[in-house]
Length: 540
Image (cartoon, rainbow, N blue to C red; front, side):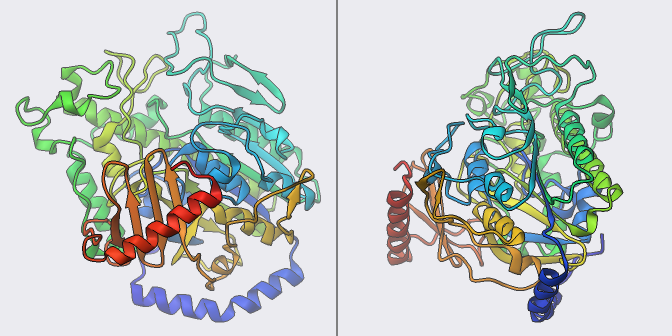
């Protein structure tokens, strides 16, 4: 990928692209069939993990998409797995579908698959679903994958002869192959690995329908790199020792690369380490940090030796990096298949993450290192802080670290290569984008019942190099966290204090709380949020 562009070059390119956007759009509409659409989503992956967003993890396939396409610097998700998926699928805020936390039946909505099926698309899915109804009950022609939240990557089911018992948090997990449910699902293939299996089925679908005249939607939501930390030994080995310099150094290097790329501003600074996280040089010092406080919640299976062992910390992040690396390898397999089928030129590929890096602590297998089937471990707050560089907080919070995602868009001949946009987007925008591409309209009713109007706005003008009217405001709510962003201003609340207020253009790392200086603005944004919560059914 070419070196980063300066902000002046970025503005210049954006202006030139905007001048030709209308012509390009008309030309595409006049000559091309509706494009194929591939939506790939990582699970619990931080903003800065992949190479083209500043990370040291090897992601050559995603980097190639970025060098040939467009990166969004300000794109948002819903901070949590199921709510993000609900918004992606429906173009609504998750609360409008009845999704507040875990999997439920999505109500009062139509899905992308249901509407694109009606527009003549073949709809395919492999990966994590995280809703009660199966994908084949909500518009997908084919489906294979985890209909649950997370699971053992090596064996989501029962112990197989001659192998260790698979470690699991909640068992049995729900899997499905089209409409056939397996619970538990015990793979016959002893080389099974979830990331590889999802890809195998996605490629199989592409082959099966290769000669159809229909365009296709392929939705490929991986479970990687969500815990448990499971990865191929050969992939882990690539990263062993690379994190022995510690989280402070790795984070500093990521930030420097992100500044060079133009993704973030140096003036934003960097969010401080989470209060529970020690400095790397203090890890081995029993008097330097309070490990008991660090692991006071969900810290089962933690030993003092693990917590004080730098090599164990290095191994945790090495396994996490290996999971992202393996996901990228599999994305490369899908992209290669699309090229081999001669369909790359008329295919839009989108890649993003469902929430920020995860700081949860889950260690249920004391004495077993991360990686194999019998292990159940997490990366914990120190490395989650790195994953969300340079932002505050993690998955489930509505600060920037919880809701910011990379979004890479690739579409040869339509998206100008190696470009970046500061246009603000949200996961609710994917539904209207897909409908725009398909030449379809969002309905006023579905299944004989009225449904809310689509909350998102199409990204197509941005993909074609132009601009669009921005959202008046964007809203978030999960558990006791809430936020609203209107223009450059964002109010955020974590349930344990008053509203905070930040100017995101000047202070995206949320270091300078302006709430006491601008109480009228706080009140205005708070009123907006309460009106949204009442309209959309958010739990207050």
